[in-house]
Image (tube, rainbow, N blue to C red; front, side):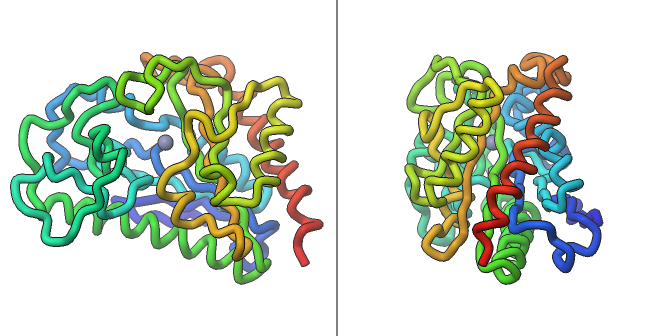
Length: 290
Ligand SMILES: [Zn+2]
C-alpha cells in the first residue's frame, strides 16, 4: 500500500497493514524529501541546497517493507522546513513580522538551523529576503503537521497492537562535519552514529543491539556522539510506556558521491545490510512481546 500526502509524505506500508503487521517496528526518514515547492524561493543554487538532504535514505531502508515494516518518508526537502524540529523552533531573524505565539529559543535556532533554516551547515544564508508569517504557517500546515500526524498514527497503531513499539528515525551525515553542523566542526564521522538522547528515548538495549550488530558487520559505530537525536525521537520516544525511538545516522560516503549525490558502488551492500539489520531486530523483538 502506498499512501501519499503530496506536499508532506509518502507512506510505504505492507499490504493489509496494520492487520498483518509482522512486528512493532516503524521507520521514518524525515530528511530524504526531494520535491522542491515552487514557493520556496531560496537565494542559493540548487546543488548547495541539496547538501541539506539525507539523499536516498528512505530508499536505503525501503527493503524493510518486505519484512512487514512500514516506512514513512517526507517528500518535502529539509531545507524548506525541517521535520526534525519542534513547530515553535522558529528563528525570529527570518521573519518580516512578529510571530503571534511564544517562540522557543533553542541551540538549533542559534546555529541558524531551526524549523526553517536561516543558513546551511557551511554558514551560507538561504534567503535574500525575509519570510512572511503566512508562508511559514503554510509550511507547517502543509508539510510538518501531516508528517508528524502520520508518524504518530503508525506508532500508536503498532503500540496498540503489541503493547510496545520500536522506531528508527533514519538520517545521514556527511563524512566530515561542516562548520555549523554541530558543536564539533571538522569532525571525521564514523560509519554510523546511534542516538537515543543518552538513553532517554529508548531502553538502552535497543541502541546496544544495533551497535553490536553493526560492529559485527565491520562498521565503526559511535553512540550519542556527536549526534544524540533531536526532536522526533525526543517527542515520540517514551521508554517507560514501551515506546522506543532510536536515531540512526549513516555516513554518506558509504553509499553516495557526496558532491554529485549519485549512488556509489557501496549502495547495494549497505541497502542489503540494512535489510538484514531490520530482520535481526525483528528476531530480537519477538520474544519481548507478551
Ligand atoms: Zn537527517
